[in-house]
Length: 258
Image (cartoon, rainbow, N blue to C red; front, side):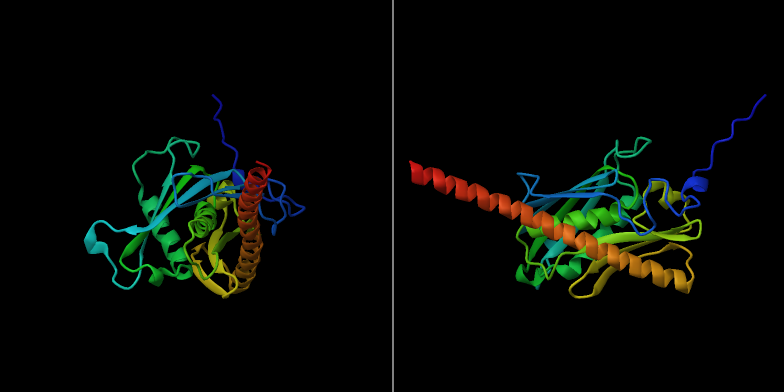
């Protein structure tokens, strides 16, 4: 009789040269694709691919709030619902909302609230719906990035966009933008959300243990990652509105020819 021994994924997360199992350096982000205005039926929407993560966010509002007892007299209420599709992970996820999804919904809402000028829309609600179509670690950070873009696409006044990035520790190395295996088998995970221009951290959580020196290094790496992602968010918005401007100019040109 031979006993099958499953290989330990944590042993190969970082090699002797300091490269991670997906080929990245410790301070290197995964490839990120951002697109704004992907849903016709939402007031604002955005899509993000970050590594193997695929997440879409839709914003509705400001609109009349129901039930009425949720009305806030001096500002808009902000509601957020984060869900993982049943096919988003290796093992089929039960379609009913889990405690983790409820917790992440709350975390995302609280990370975005400081950026929204909700006092402009008293007694209304702004709803944010986030669907994780494929998950590979760091989905709360990627969701914050997409949801902030969707709010901007909806024309809701913001102090600025919120960007987000995770940092952790694997085999004693501090690394940025953890993917699924690094998240599961690493020694620490530190997601951060940032309003860069205001130098305001709107989310900070930590799972695991870091020394003071490791925490300082991880925190600074997360801030740098957030600033890089913020530039990508700006580029995504510019692409959308440049496309709209080009379309309008093309229509005007055709009308002049007629």
